[in-house]
Image (tube, rainbow, N blue to C red):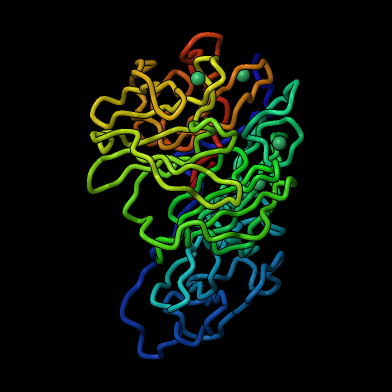
Length: 407
Ligand SMILES: [Ca+2]
Ligand SMILES: [Ca+2]
Ligand SMILES: [Ca+2]
Ligand SMILES: [Ca+2]
């Protein structure tokens, strides 16, 4: 069963369709040192090519520029946002649109890319300058029964969380829209995973690792797509682990468990969920060799025996292996595909199409090429079937570029 999509009439995902002016004509300041007159927190423009003379400044988006219309010849963006420079007033897209990266220090300044700038919009992420929403477009069909995982807001529809490059977290309910559920700060996390309920309240939760401390946090799901109070479930040391993957229940107590690979040894460890949301004593599942895998996926039940299964991608070959779950461990692996190294990330949030079989979606990297498209940021849907493996992938959306993770 396919998902019907509102396809974007879109530019190639590999390019934002922008004139990117991230590095301007940085250079020795002229004698007047006029670029330094632009205050921190402001976007500034000058009518001259050496940033001398009268200066325009704004710390908010400006829909029309009045006497400064088409006058910018030098610009400096000392805000913390991207400045979208539109040739059209009111942030239109008929003409050229350029983007100037944030540079609060003021060390980079130069030409605006166009002498026809008529409006300036300040946004958190560069993709927004390209006319895209800050979040990607996720579509899913309702399922007949409440799924065991992949449904943060409890509406029987698979949903996704996406982190943008500004560190905001967006909840994607499955109708193409996005809801801001994290206003910022999420870039402090260097691992994010979810799969079912860890805290024991029946609502799906998120586990995140804090990069600076190696602490592991459980963010309790609020059943709305938002996340509630966080609980410290790992006091440190988690940066020694790779591929943190919330998995589903391997121990057989009905609680979701966590997998992680120890970087120094290549061992695969299981951290069992407990009634408090904390993790129990870890259990060795794989004695070694797991460093040869560069992705683990808590897929759900592929073998249809009621037990969650693990998918892993082999770095050297791009092969995707199925490790069937059995009580307390993993059974002999089965090869289910090859060529998967062209994927940057995997989304396994249960039955997306609503036919009863868990599905997977993958986000492409720059090496991806098919009849449907090429390059990074494409969402390719892999529908589950009654037997192990997937239906052939179908490229469905191209809005998954310029993000900082999705899970
Ligand atoms: Ca949902
Ligand atoms: Ca919970
Ligand atoms: Ca299974
Ligand atoms: Ca399905």
